[in-house]
Figure 1 (cartoon, helix red, strand yellow):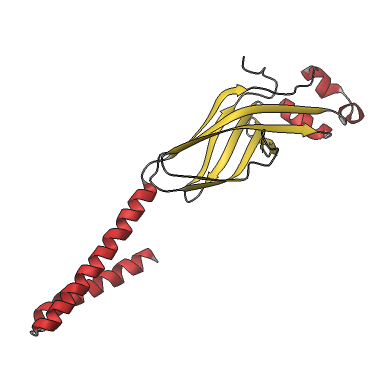
Figure 2: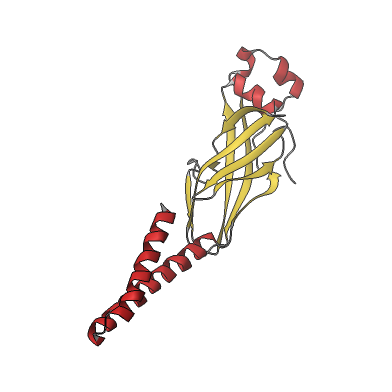
Length: 198
């Protein structure tokens, strides 16, 4: 589509440039030159806008790993060997600080925040992070240009024996987020079983 628009723009531009030389009426020549200037300036504005949107990047960082968690006081062996009935009432929570920085010249939208658990190449589970201050899901963020934001978030497994086993088994944990027009960013988190940062 962009290629077709570029070709159409080039054809119009060439036609107007030729018309300046073909038409010998000064008033009409002035109108054609004004049209050429208008077309060129609109294309320059589009290119500058696109350049500003694409220049810079969005940075995702996890500060210091887990901090301020509400942990179960059990071993990994207990989690793997206990029955569903024993694990069903348990609640295990991890907290961490996520930092996002927009180095672009335009507002950037982010969504689909998720904490992904895997073992080797096998995807085990995904949890939605919630803002620690409000309990609301970390769902959509619009970050102004040249601004950094920081949020303490929590993820939890509550009354779900199968999920609890999965997060304890995972050897790779990542925070992922989708950046509008760019794709997905990710940052590594510690394993679920690693202690909180001091």
